[in-house]
Length: 362
Ligand SMILES: Nc1ncnc2c1ncn2[C@@H]1O[C@H](COP(=O)(O)OP(=O)(O)O)[C@@H](O)[C@H]1O
Ligand code: SF4
Ligand SMILES: [Mg+2]
Image (tube, rainbow, N blue to C red; front, side, top):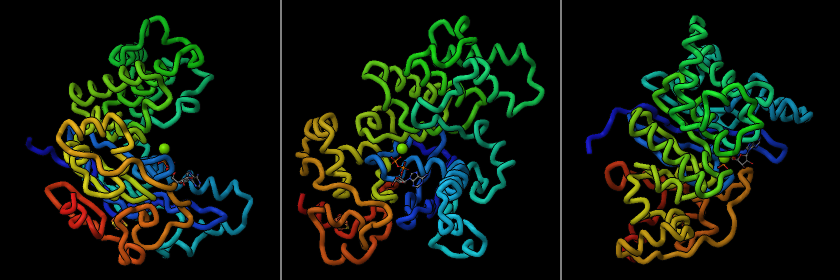
């Protein structure tokens, strides 16, 4: 398969929240590439930093972290965002590089970001609950996305496009129901409306944050089919964020596994599901029955059953490899030195001191 050009190139991205307990290193030195027409699945347990990474890539993280500080009533937290601290590297906020279609996103002023968000890269946010405004009809809210990016769009054209996109996401009776408020739609229907809103301005890339987690199995499948269609028919690049390896397996060409704010392994989906190399990926994959079954069918015996213990608090991440207290292969070096990011095969990256020995043992 020939590879598309990179749409999004993330390098050494860090996004830290201020908190009373210290910095929450939600995204900690992460690098990732998303290519044209490709789906990258970002997989990890809850709290591993996936949503924070999406916010940082869209230029939304700083505002949320600032808001956390401003509403804390804690002068120290507020000071954490004050002048002077900007020069330091271990500080709240975002650092690193996010290049979207050749343009650096980090550090762009909000008025520039507003032109890019929604129009060129859009987000289907996590949690249906707060995503739609209960005060306005879904047609109004979908049209608003168009209006933000084109002041001159005519009313007739706006309505035609809203109905076209609500149709694309297969919202039943859209031509009658577009005047209704969000409260009258089910979870699956709300998710379809959010997908229409993310698509209507014709973005190159969509970030879908846990798009199926609030839905039952039948609805999950339908929403995944809509996402598959936007990838295959519209050629939109997708970053599919999920804690569920089964969901990621449905769509992803590339899988990136996140643990404690780091991408510990990423690579082509087939390799990641059938032959993962990082002990955390191995454990994570074997804890999903559908994936373990896939591995067995490919003649591989899943080595680990689940992962002992819980992920650490992100204000108190263990030194060295953050997975070392839970890893069955831990060596002395793992307790003190953070493993370097290494490309072990084309496009297959890993952060583990011992991956080679572990592979030979298999
Ligand atoms: N506004 C916030 N202020 C402080 N910490 C936060 C905030 N939002 C999320 N976090 C913390 O950041 C870490 C990563 O969270 P998140 O990005 O939501 O992970 P995921 O999407 O993988 O579940 C968690 O430890 C979470 O508690
Ligand atoms: S670096 Fe060490 S502790 Fe971390 S995953 Fe690899 S073997 Fe386990
Ligand atoms: Mg999340």
